[in-house]
Image 1 (cartoon, rainbow, N blue to C red):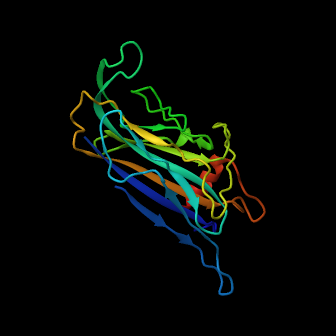
Image 2 (tube, rainbow, N blue to C red; image 1 turned 45 degrees about the horizontal axis):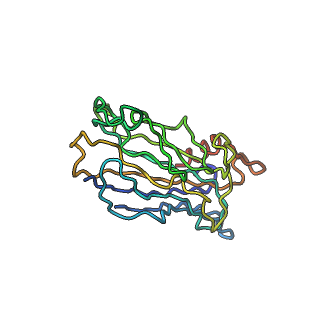
Length: 240
């Protein structure tokens, strides 16, 4: 790594079968001279209420509460990236006087995040996600993933841990060694209301979670660091 920065990536992939999960860690350690040992940085995803291999039906809510844990000795700025599958399905309208009316077939995220207030985006056709306090959405890094034919297969969202109730605040919070983010990014997910569509029946759908961490000091130089989420991500992503 060109700047001798400590950074860490961990990932969690959840498979939900419609009517498991794997966890992997990638560690980066810089070794310096014979007389100095470099620090390490290791983080991981934890989901206390997640139950492996759930079988789900339309509009079912599933407990899924991803936190980030700093398991090493280096203070870190941390990010969480979540990829939700997208598929072309036929939905029902889920609000208003015409609730239950069949909508046109369209490509939508199959899962919505549910926050601690038990709320989620009511826009069945949009890609907006709700999330908990303490996180800053990095909208500029939201991306659609496509296959070789150009068909959208997923949407990836990126969030920075700020430990601030205002999601607009982009000053990152330090996650100290041995500590866990105070809140998960979300508490549950809800499966889309595809009651009118049998295409998903029997399939397995994956929610992919990756967490990233980088040291909090000396990001700019030996005398300066950075706290703004976008700039911290700039330094971190160059090291990936």
